[in-house]
Length: 288
Image (cartoon, rainbow, N blue to C red; front, side):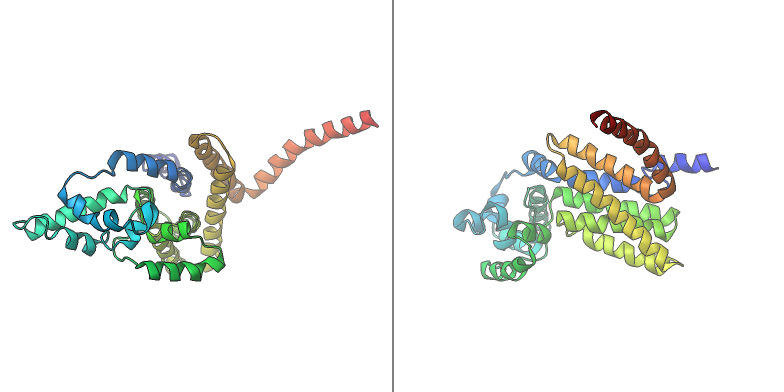
C-alpha cells in the first residue's frame, strides 16, 4: 500500500511531504526574470486600434516610463482599459469592447512589468507611497513589483493554489502549513501579490484544521527554511539561469532531508568530517 501511495503522489507531481511543489516554486522564483523576458518577447505585442487606444495615455505623456506606466497611466486596469476602447468603433457591442480590453490586458500580463488589474495610482500617490516605504528598505522597483502581477507571478500563484488544494485534500494540515510557509517566503522574496494571499490563507487554514497548532507552526517554519535556502543558493550561483535553478533544487532537497531526518544527517556529516579531520591532522603533523 505504501508503494502505491508513493506512486500516486509522484504521478500527481507531489512527494509524500509536499516538497515537489516547493522545488517547483523555488525554481520558478529563481528563473522568474528570464522567464518574464521570454514571455514578453513571445506574447506582449500590439496589433490594432484597441491596443493603440489603451496605450494612448502612455504614448502621449510617457508617464512612469516603461517600468511604471501600467500602474500610473490609468488605462491598464480592467475598468480603465474598458473605458479606453469604448470609442474605438461606434458599432461595437459591450461584449466586444470587454473582450478587446481583456485580451489586451492578458497580453500585458506577459510584459516584464505586468499590470495592476484593479487599481491605478497617480504620480503624486506613487511618489508619496514610495517615500513612506523607502525607510524600510523597500525600493521603487520592488514596490511596483509587489503592486503588479506578471506572467511568472501568475504562474507561481497557480502552482501554489493547485498544490495546496491537492495536498490539503489528501494529507494532513501540517503539510499544507509546510507548503504555505515556503510560499510566504517565496512571495516576499519575489514581490508576488498573487502568491502571498494564497500562502497566508493556507497557513490560516492549516492552523484552523490542525489538532496541534505547535506542530503546524513548526512545519510552516521548515517550509520557509527550505524555500529560503533554495532561493539563497540560486541567487549566489552565477552563470546561466539553469545552473541557479539546479542549485535551488539541490539546496531544497538537502535542507528538506536535513530537517526531516536530523539524526541521520548528523551521523552522515560526522562520517564525512572524520576522514577530513584525519587528513588535516596528518598534514599538520607533517608540517610540524
